[in-house]
Length: 157
Image 1 (cartoon, rainbow, N blue to C red):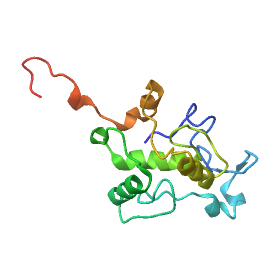
Image 2: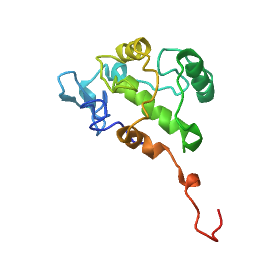
Image 3: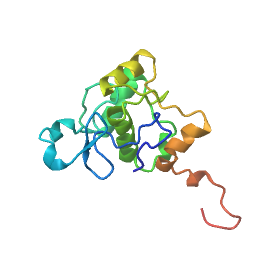
């Protein structure tokens, strides 16, 4: 799945605590090779698709988590019927919040994912911005609108 890249959430490149080639990065931006990092596992962020994007609540499955986020925060996936792979989209959104510490709505970045989550709750940003072309572009890889395209005359649908 696509990772939030340049232009999404400021300068966050989507690599989070790991460099693109898999080496852990320290807070000064310098790389640590695997043999140098004894606490490397502590730096890894686990993504659980059954966990809420906005708090630590975990449900039994992805659909229950989506329902929980809808009921608790008003969160919904725009045009969900056209999502090709909901798990991939949720993995992207979790990465954006938990690794990139980036608000789903305004793309503001924070020092921690908890600060990001609190911002989204406080500012009613528990939603996906889906109003402008840039918003569509960010998420377009997750959607398939081909079923809405007109078919050629005489062709089968």
